Length: 492
Image 1 (tube, one colour):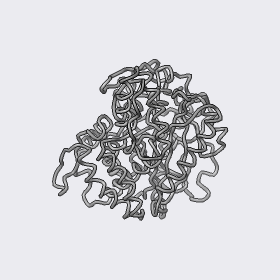
Image 2 (cartoon, one colour):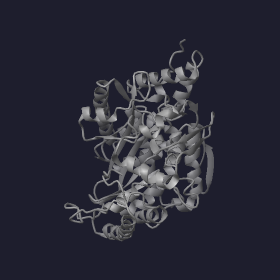
Image 3 (cartoon, helix red, strand yellow):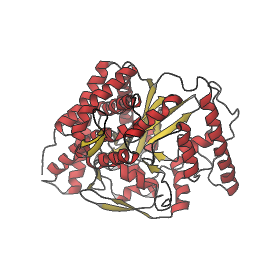
Image 4 (cartoon, rainbow, N blue to C red):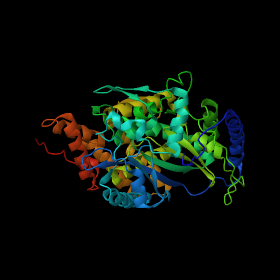
């Protein structure tokens, strides 16, 4: 939801008119997608990279506005808390060597942010959750002032009350009493955007849902939250609970989830579900004239886009008035390095493309509940997760560990990428990185857990977490993939 919001208060007339416009927008979206040529551009991929700002001793640095001002680059945006930033990469066509281009831009932007942050005594770090966070870092006072997060917080607070309870299980279970969506600042993601034609959207979206589980198992980078060892991807339960709407939505769908069913009926169905299932949070009424994009001729549909931006499924549909629809993949963590994120991207996009082009319909092969269970098992246990997958002969389903399954999926992902026009050498290079994690058993999460165990032999947990975070930042600067990292030396 990149739209800026200035209106502070709303009355019932605003809500009523906004709901009317949502209903009208769904009809207008149907018509837009039916226009010949809509969404027929080259397949492209874009990305958003979230990051933390931290001090020299590994603590969060509430400096995002100052750092952004110093960077002075429109691709850098503020995120939910004052120690979060986001970099928006330039979309590239999914052919040739797109991941090389994404890596180069990522490294360039990260260097620029690093220089700017350094001038304020801070540095950026790409990690799913910052290990040194404590509950007081995630209070409402941490929210980035003004902006859309401030407005979302106010809208949700009117519905849920405060405080609200977050519960995390894992090796060291914990709870957190939250007073704000500022708790979402504990999570940083690497989000991909894949342009898909309307005709291909249903198959591609369902394929993305199935592919996300095993890819997440290989990509974990968020095992430590509030000083506790939890899931390999603790971002997942943190993000889903962090809006505080679960109690309020006990009778219906929550706003942050994996979803509840395979998609049928095309991309419009997802927007229809969002309008039907979720209350309006921000009834900001558009006054845009003209009503259609000057170049594409597509309708702006600002109310529908705003509302969809307040429904946070892990794979989310995006309508763009430039004249296309796309899938936003939201489940991957930030970091550890640009090559790791490129490898995660290649695996997820390649496997999605391969699965979407198979003759068998995923909806008849596997129950949606099984794909959803895969996702949460992967988030909890990483490479050790037990996952269910269609058998090689497509006659049934088989269970195996993620570490056993992923090597069988990597050639399929390579085929998906190459068939889309990606250079075979690039595909092989990046998928080799994923294979390296499987063979060593070391994802970003596993490295953090191993490092913490080593460092705690000579230090208390708090000191060990600070040293771990410093070591992580230092070794990630080498740009070497995480499966090659050594464990930091023990010291007193």
